[in-house]
Length: 169
Image (cartoon, rainbow, N blue to C red; front, top):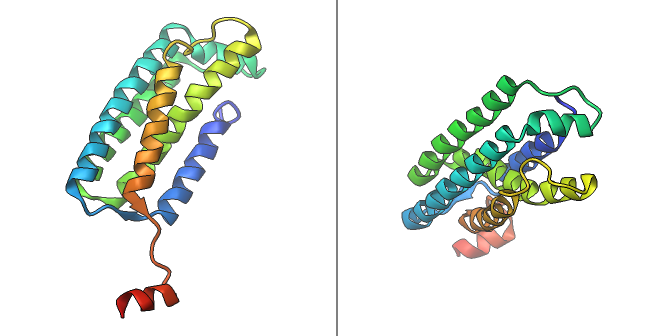
């Protein structure tokens, strides 16, 4: 399962990097609130995508394409539902201004972007429908919008250099 989910592990590392280096969260409640609503839209889209993947047996087809053993349906459901719960909690955290909430939201946005591209590439590889293809474009577009929105509401921590001293003078 680790090999088949390697792309997601890489996205988790990128999300951790973005969280660490873009740690300041917008102090504007309205900016955070609008972003939280976009997260809700993303969760709905990702849930639809998960539903398509589940009913079309992505958990069998994707590992098989990589030459791996199929994932169990139970594990696939547990994995996806667990992340959906984390993202819902993170949306509330973002709305309240809890900075660490951006970590799972960066992962959501990046995973949506990856899904938007990967399912198209998988369908091209098999030269036919591949599970998740129908909802992938919507997921990818919302993921792109969410990445750009998270980028706008986060900022790097000040480094304490000369520019900070000049700003305080």
